[in-house]
Length: 104
Image 1 (tube, rainbow, N blue to C red):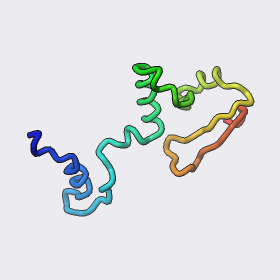
Image 2: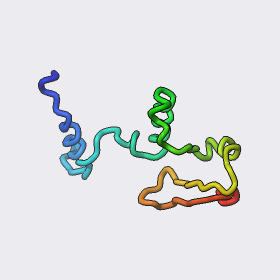
Image 3: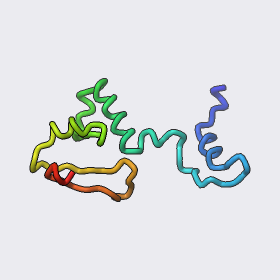
């Protein structure tokens, strides 16, 4: 029922495994990775841009490689700066800044 709804129950339950052991996930909301991982966040922002184009102009253009390599090649401007971020990287690991197609 609505009166017994406890939004934090799911967090606490996620921290304690079925065998009673602690999983260490007390600070994670279920399914939050859909919004914090770079690739899925990009997809969500693109979707919102189709619905609210004026409100979601704050992000730079992005491409998902290798899936959108051909589109990226067409849009690429030699001498412009591009930031390449691996979808599985974190804390700056694997990020590179390029200005030529050869560096991609």
